[in-house]
Length: 269
Figure 1 (tube, rainbow, N blue to C red):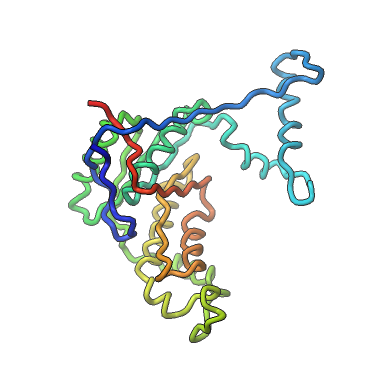
Figure 2: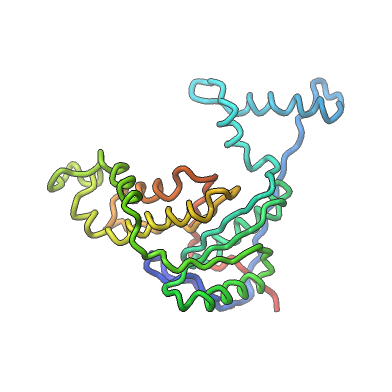
């Protein structure tokens, strides 16, 4: 039995314990090697470290071959370096076959991320479903032998966002709003008032999710979240990108993942 996928809509219910079945095993691996000393001579650990940094500086360059700053270089190579103790926060919003959960779990088994604990966040439609959803998620993780430190169920994602958060979003899209009716040449380039009105509930949901991310995950080492699925016929590219920018800005390193609703989680009874 394979994991039964949910719908691809943002209005779908939170992931619940899926039906299970035999399937494939997904794995990942990798690592880095020290740069050899010039001339092939083997040197001690201190000398190898001296040679490693220049090799990274030469490997990654900016436009026109310009040298990158240390901060940019550190961001590019973060998955190659040993991470300090912290958490990998997984926001599993919709059932996508389990990919959003599997990728961070594989990361946590790598030596670079071995000191980071896995925390799983899920959504509940009502407060009286909190205990049921939490037990269901914990049982699911136990079946797949996924080591985690905590399961947190969020009940109030549909709550009205704060005025300050709405104002920040309005400022983000201010230069891309159409003053009136959108012409054919501006379609897809500007955001109409009609679109904002039709998508107000989803916009509020993404703004509210940002508030929850700041509240729960602002100090995490890495955030992994299910990628919201765009609707080509109902939401413009500009508004969709504004949602993503709102979710990810001013937060720790962020990975958005969307599976194709094919099961990637397997257990053997």
